[in-house]
Length: 121
Length: 105
Image 1 (tube, rainbow over the protein chains, first blue to last red):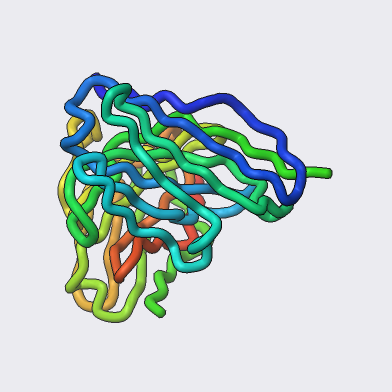
Image 2 (image 1 turned 120 degrees about the horizontal axis):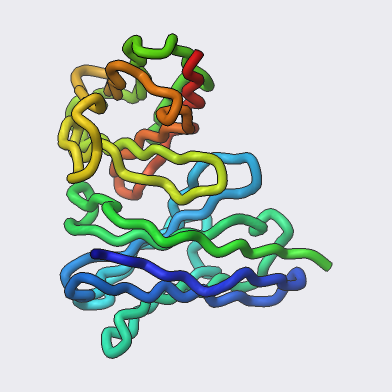
């Protein structure tokens, strides 16, 4: 069965960077894209961006442009999301999600368990 | 920019039908996906591309999309259906609705 296993919780200081990993299994990694979605405490879902595991093409949310980088390592079937210049309002649970399609046809079929990132001085 | 509007909360009696709406300008021309999220858990896809159910999702969950409103319908609501529900579309980027809390009375 498809599984996405994310790295553990992180505590960071303002201005630091965090890199969250998402290891996929149960399917051909390059067949699906990976999106990243975050959820601040008590809030709704916020899309951060998407990366094609096939060719590395990315599409980032405008508000995060310049602070976020998404990458994949096909040799280990792992996706990464790095967020820089962390602020307190970046405190959230970060999810990876995989699925077929691109852009308007993309569907986030499978989700990781989430990674809590806390930004605090 | 494109916006999605969901009611903050919907209540339904046990065994009755719940309808959760997602409003957007001409949303009927877009693919709409729905996610269920229970407290402390990751979201789960329950409907994709307007009306398709992933494997493992009960037939009680159905979706429709026309005009300016997409609707998630949950028939014979159960206590286990209590959750937050989010609609999602693509409009140059992925957008989520604000979420609807479903309460089963």
